[in-house]
Image (tube, rainbow, N blue to C red; front, side, top):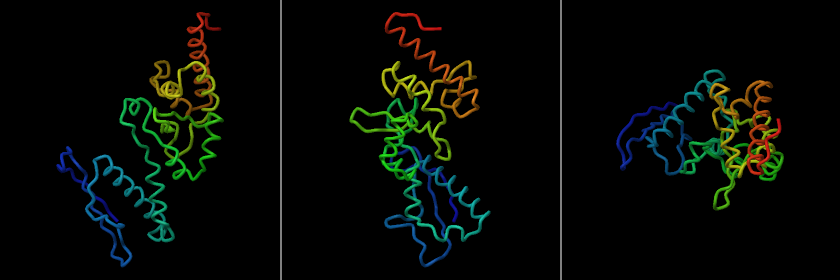
Length: 221
């Protein structure tokens, strides 16, 4: 299996990536109903497909071409698609996004909605709600393996009483701090225990300052 991309004008878009799929001859080889090669994708989607193909080929080179023989291709494809966060077409995309909705996390992480609800109550998973009531989970809190940001549950409860809503909490985690060489609290939480403690102290100080500003009382030292 190989992929190649090239840019070309198409249907009013500035460019698309033309991804050509060449599959080893087999009676069972199929791209699925309604899908033909070459497949025309946006430049970002095309780059994603090519990057995945390269990493998949690396695995096959290491484990052999028969490593995926027992794979349920449709199920794996569903999980791969679910693992790609989506944008909300607003300024929040750049500030704290992109996002996973609940259905995407259920498919990607193979967890129940009830489990996600428990993680949210434990402050281990941060969520925000849109104006039309949709629950979203900012992708910054997941690492490349899908793991959650450590120590989040020790920080979120400190900030929630002081900030307007969980959108503001998410923004706090994504704000670069000069004293940390421009790293954000979310990035610091993935560092050492000392880094995590620095975030906790910063959250405590920021929350105290914000709460004091509402009451007019001085922040405690």
